[in-house]
Image 1: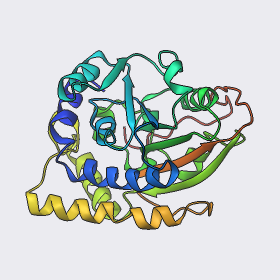
Image 2 (image 1 turned 180 degrees about the vertical axis):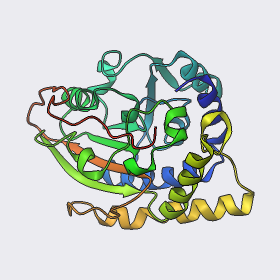
Image 3 (image 1 turned 120 degrees about the horizontal axis):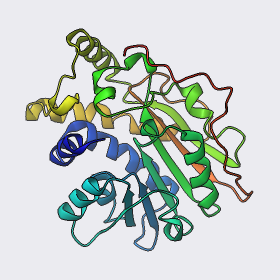
Length: 274
């Protein structure tokens, strides 16, 4: 992500239905996995402009890290008193990673060329019993100008998503598509943006704030997925099979994790609409 996209995030993430709705889903999952307490620590990897990190500061101790100096500057300005680090994970946060009860990896993997290495290195540095919450763009067929504007490497099918931790010593608590109820609307919007050859919102993104009543309804529709997603805990069945994003909640087991690189036999990430 570049500075213009960070500016869009900073402006919208405390008001836009997409940010607010999914945080309600994250909160429902985290509350079950990690009962809120100020002594429990969350590490937000790829924290961007800090909105997700700050959203949980009343329930947990929270620290964010991001490789972008611009993003961290935004975060520190918006949320003074919170700890934000400029650097890479896990290299520049091993001290926090080994203590964290939960690690957030929210819309980060799509920016990373070797997503297998990042996931396995994070799990290797986490303590036994800690949780890793991962969210990434779903359905490669939704690829479009928005993805190019955000410099995405890929979008994930559930099958490709699960490959990231397959064979690693983790318990898969939840793995599902996300933002499923509004998927038909998103699919139509992405189709229209491809016809136009550019994203629907500002700064090469599809993010724009709708009228307040519409924003409230969309937030409620999206956040309403939380109940079904939490209910799918431990079933190995996705709450939703098709959505705009994919989500997984993993629990680190006691066995050691050996970091691994992206398999050479893996086909190139599909980008059907360049």
